[in-house]
Amino acid sequence: MCALHMLCSFLTSCITILRIKAAMAADTIQAYLEHGTIQNSVNFPAAALPERKEGSIRVTVATQNVPGMLAYISDVFAKHGINILQQINTSRGDLAYNVIDVELGADTIDLKDLQKELTMHDGVLSSRILFGVAGAGYARNIEGSYFV
Image (cartoon, rainbow, N blue to C red; front, side, top):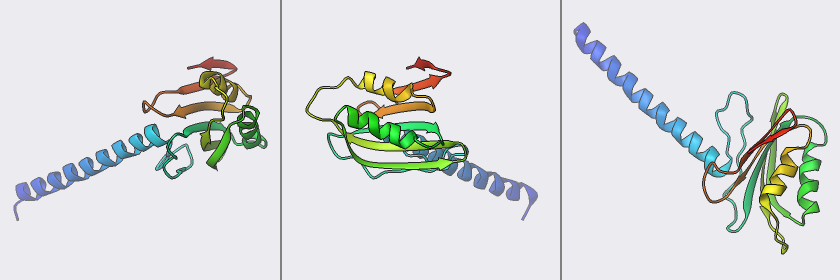
């Protein structure tokens, strides 16, 4: 086999591998935007919930990995009469990630106010409310300032 033929075979294999990796990256980003799923992350722990029930809202909250954060998040929902249908809390080092499916109560609630209350607690890094448009609903707490 000549060197040129070997080089062409090698480059074809490299291109195929790059296409596969690009498709995997696209699928990973899509799963995060649409479902809050995290996989193959360097900084965040892996987290995935099954599909959310129709009519429910998925909320993700990234926090410092310290005692009391999960209780705080649950208390905020309870205070507003919001039922938690399913949730997962995972951590990696100093970071915890929560994916929570909730069912709104009979009372009307302003999701922006709810998100701000969740996000501005000391130790909460960011939150997302997932329904409708994928990727919308992101908020961040940066040194006590609220960014939407």
